Amino acid sequence: MSDSQPQPPHPSSSASGATPADTAALLLCGARLTDGRTVDVRLGGGRIEAVGTAGSLSAHTARVDLSGYLLLPAPAEPHAHGDTALTAEGDGPASYDAEEVQRRATEAALLQLGHGATALRSHVHVGDVQGLDALAAVLQARRSLRGLTELTAVAMPRLLTGIAGADGLAMLRDAVKMGASVVGGCPDADPDPTGYVEAVLELASEHGCPVDLHTDADDPARLGRLAAMAGGLRPGVTLGPCGGLGRLPAEVASRAAEQLAAAGVTVVCLPQGGCGPVDRRMAAPVRLLRAAGVRVAAGSGALRDVANPVGRGDPLEAAYLLASREGLRPEDAYDAVSSVARTVLGLPEVRVEAGFPAELLAVRGDRLAGALSLAYSRIVVHRGRVVARTSAVREYCNSAAGLDLPRQGRGEPS
Image (tube, rainbow, N blue to C red; front, side, top):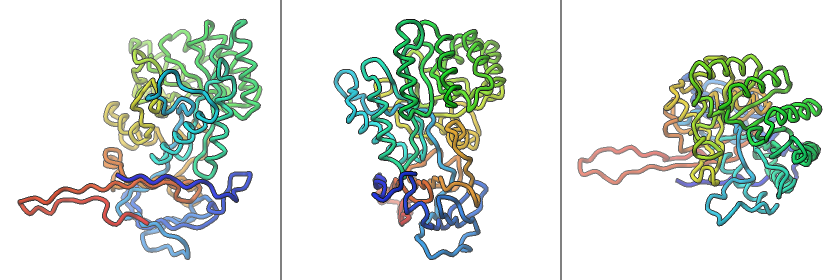
């Protein structure tokens, strides 16, 4: 398998993030859609301009042959940890040197972009030894990635209550001023989890920020209080990974899920493995949550750090696990890493229809189930231009029986 990394943004990129390529037209030819149609798709101005039957669209522009590929709305990553990514093989604690954090966050974002995620939310620790340096480094990575992927940062303080939490609260306010667009944290780690949540919700309401909290969700009373406090907050509250719900009696977990649904809280599960201790690695009960009416997205969590040294950060693997382990239909599983994940990030809906954002993923295959099973070759489109490609070629040696053995990858799109 050969991987090609996206090229850096054009030096003439504007302050708004637009690049000359955003407005250039591009024709995607012969792509298959999930409804079975084979179509041409014309892109321009960062959006889908037209969708027509194969061969029906003409354009004096660049073309990409997507014969043999399934065209999908691009995934989004709602739960990444760019500041600690790619640290599993290091000696000792992860370095929080600003330059090193920026390098890791950038490389991690590019890895996930190669998998198809054209937008991601990265949770970043603030306070303690690293202060705001790690956040500043991730925000710098965000600027360097402009035009390739959309990176947003969640500020995560350790403590927010009592005397020890005063510094954390001040740091959280400074983090929002610096550019952290989401307020988060881990209330389970604070001596007063309810007070922690109150502080986060108050600050988020003051600044109009979304909230994204880490919780194991193994305490139904605490979860009920959180849901009651979160209800009605705009632009919304997200919880994850909520693996503790799976350890509760089914009746208790169902009541908690109903409370979350009533409050409009979204849950981000991590099918590929949690981002905390191994003894709390159990996945959230996705089917129970969905049955209660909770909106469920799926994220990747740890990407090759100490919590999961083999984390892949691949949204299609997350969808595959939801389908194979949780029994979701392939369409619902992919929805959890695409449209629902985009909703968590506050991004507009994507459909392969005229007028929608040109955020697309082409994977080799003709059916969604097959793509989730063997999605090795991928072409990623962000803002209407190809920003990443991964090509896989499978060959077998000649058979003595003279069989015409299958070969994948002849004539890759150009």
